[in-house]
Image 1 (cartoon, one colour):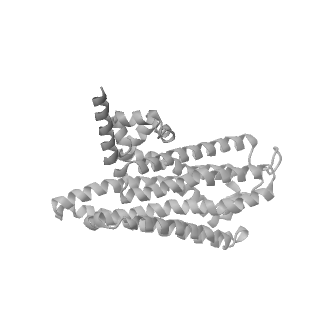
Image 2 (image 1 turned 60 degrees about the vertical axis):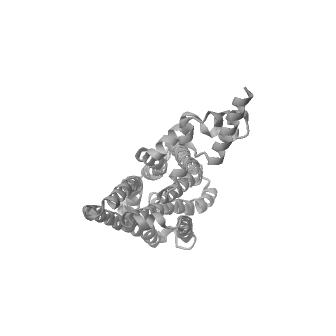
Image 3 (image 1 turned 135 degrees about the vertical axis):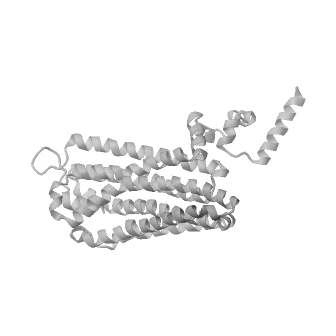
Length: 349
């Protein structure tokens, strides 16, 4: 979809203030800084989500497996997609069109890949919420291996759609390409998401006719569904403007004259901003994530991974503070070893 914006606004970003220049140097620096900050926040926030998930066993629910898959996709946005986009824009500004074209060959499929992963994960989570609320018992006893299989299919599907970039016509023939990506990357997934949440509403409204136990399960699962719905709204708020810009350019060629490259950069930054805000929204809505992340930031838990065999690490385990146990699950064998060491210490005294 990036092609449509560039084709209609042009790519003349060369140095100087002469006629035809679409981006000033000061704007280039400002936007580069904005994109770098978005990338940093996206990487840090989503890595925190992944680290906390890996350390805390209670967070390893089916929904959270898919949330971590979404976080991994957002890490790709921050580490690969945004840097490639900034490089591409700077190369265009410097007049290095051959190098820019080469970067674009890598950037375009990666941009599509990360975008597809985001919306596919939201679609899968929505379907999973329907299953959890409509069939809570089956959901609880289902084989956890399905989580990994569904995640694998999601990533393969995202990669397959992005691979179409190498086969579908580009440039002046972008219209057909736009329709394909619009259907696969927006209309079909969001139709499924909409149907899923309408189904959830219907099931929740029927809660009065359920047994008390099942009604409590539905209520608990519904809270998670509300959190995921907040992520979906965020995705719409950050992604829809850029999609709408491409849609306007697709239907109205005359409108291209009023679309500046600064507008394209603004909507693209808003598009990427969702990757930085996803962990904020999920942490705010989920206390189980929020508390361990807060502890991780306050006590600098990342340092512990570099000193696992040191005296500092051993003394940390011996203290066994309540807040430390909130961050990581200590195995029963570790607890037994700790008790035996403490008893030995007492006897030696």
